[in-house]
Length: 186
Figure 1: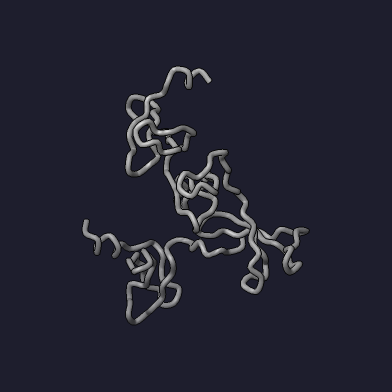
Figure 2: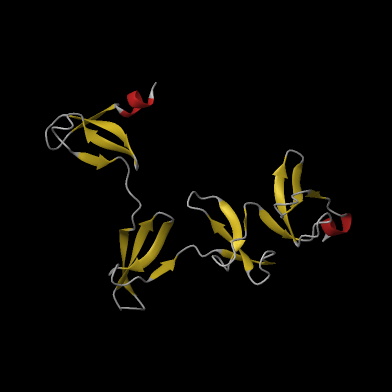
């Protein structure tokens, strides 16, 4: 099936303005529903709900520390968060899922610590808490240790076909590191 045929697919809904069938079309911001009698009728509607920070629930009894207005639970592009009901006049927000801090220091800047974060797609990664000053990030679980090949101060845990193995966290090295027997006993 061609892309044009896929997006010209008819829906079982009719246009609320003219009564013609609605069809799925593709635009630069993704698919959307449109009237089949376009350009005579210019009715369009988003295919899915937009994650634009809309209010999910009003949190009665909880006040904004900045402006004393009511706080609300919002759905944004990176998930749920608590914000002021007077947005955009008041920009107070609170994160619901705070990132977990590890005891490992950042090997790139030496000043920050690594945090476990989630991307907007839900994938877990570890990054320096001094972002944007330090942009160190890895996709695998960091492990304390030093690479025997390049002496980089951080290792990472990867799942391989042979089981879980340790690798150098340096993008320049990335070699496998053997686990010593005394380290496994601890």
